[in-house]
Length: 200
Image (cartoon, rainbow, N blue to C red; front, side, top):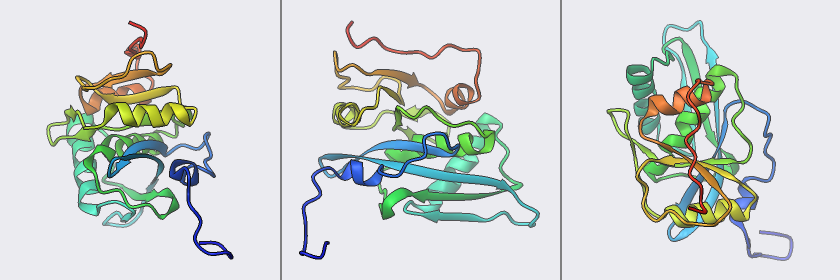
């Protein structure tokens, strides 16, 4: 809405990513879907020590029950202790995420904030996390990656065994089988990043 009435937003992703601070820990770009249209949005997390008996959990733009599940999986399967920390999660731009594919981006932002390590600014994240810690494939992989490449992203972290992976689009991706793999990658594990060559 402008002073001259409604105006078309030609690229919603640019609107949601307009004011990113790429050097700040706790921020991950989620490659999501709004119906059949791909949308990139920033997931922001702040993990801070608390002196309260019951840590705070504040969520804007995402399901609070889903956040509780991700926190439980991180603690049970990855050894990430958040019981003495307040957790704040925000989806930039007032956007509401309803698809479970955001699990991987949320977990990445949480671990990044806790570790104080900024994630790569040219990387997007998507994938569903199960209660066992496995990362499950999601639909519309090709559309998500195409939108990310169009906006200048060159890397993606996505579930292993994802279908519909594009070839020759200039992007590289890391295929994650489980959440501990993701945590190890963010924390700087000695394991090399498993990247796929799109030209193969």
